[in-house]
Image (cartoon, rainbow, N blue to C red):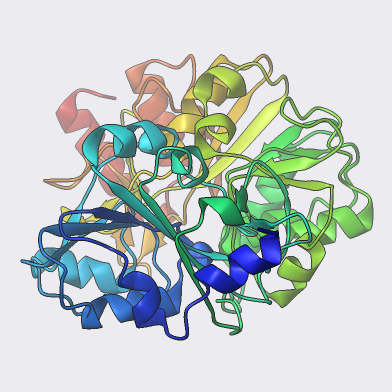
Length: 427
């Protein structure tokens, strides 16, 4: 049977028909963000034979599904804005992880895996592409019990290790809709200042890990005149296209695919997705490769850029909780922080605004809030950057760290922080 005949045989008329191949107690795993299949996900609510199933998702871009938890338990691996509420309402549970560990964690913690994913249309050889994704799904494809695909003509066809052959597929449904896109993020003056400060720490020839958000966008705005940069990251944001077009990127230091950028997922706008489509300069690899600290540590002149919520006098970074309540998850911050610490000439940079809540709360604090999560340990932290400057913590004592952090805190809080530091014996 040729590949088109196989396609026709496995194509279903409805999304419900496609997900109906799922049996009770099978674990359902979907890619993160753009790779999540919206029609298949919604159809789960109408599947009346589900019982004791679990749905594993990460950074979902859609509202939380209304599913009977006795039938389908939803487990998030990185909370979105809706899941934060759902977590405390016991509609969703959270699986702690380093992003790089997820393929192995899912292999160990799940049974009878069902992969559901959005893919590009099939090529003439019978292959679909996971497009914007590779993440933790690609390493599970060989052992998955079932594979169900949502074919979307808007999903870019990308290169790397993210292909699925029609012979592996149990059911597929065509659903051609626009892909989720990042919102427009206005830059605040603080973002511009931090962006320029971080860009000045980046040298020609550096390898860069950077993501999505106002501060990363501001940083990339100041990198267009750099040269010979390599992009080795977990997520491809829109602004990376600007770096390619300006000639700032050569990717010659990439350990996975020299001459091309590598990532494990992408989230941007149609401009980014069009740029990725059939572009060999973009290679998608599994997260247990892109985020492997052992591999990351071999990259000279590696610069990793991440964000955090608050930093204490020791340098501990809480990037996951606010006032002791869960907000997101670790993601790849730990993976890249450890890797950068071990890399020759590496720099691990963590950025944050000096205040929040309209300038009423300092984000440089004596101790993390009760119940806070330590996302980056004091022993892995390197550079902390606010709009008031840079604190290089690596190699500094507790008292030196405390003073360096107070120096980049908002001036309105410095006297209070000094008093607290003295009471703690840190100054």
